[in-house]
Amino acid sequence: MSRRVFKVTILLVIFGVPVLWYLFLQFFGENKFELTPIRTIDTLCSISPAQVYLAKRPINIHEENQLNRLMSHLEKRQVLLDSSYLSCLSDTARFSLFLIDDEQYLRGYYDLTILEVDRLIVEIDLINQLNDGTNSY
Image (cartoon, rainbow, N blue to C red; front, top):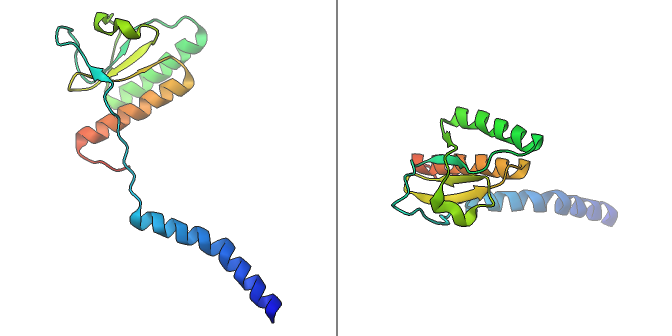
């Protein structure tokens, strides 16, 4: 009998703890994603808001592929890609892409790599969702 109780106890621990943890997180956990601004853009800069700026042209085939992938995602999200030079962002000249929101805040800068382009796409979705007024994913 004690062997059977031991097996039932082990099964309850193995399956019960993850279920209890999941239920706890469902009731008391909050998912809040924030994208804090890096800095404001100088008011003398002529920047149209809520755009992605391409500061440097791709120099190899991998960067070109990532730019093409990004452009297809931006078309779906109706976000413009501007390739004009931004002198007000010259201190961040090593980066290829910049995300600027409606309030003229620099929200992020990115390279043309797979991980950085994925991060940019997620952050565009996050800004769009925050602008829509819904705060949870």
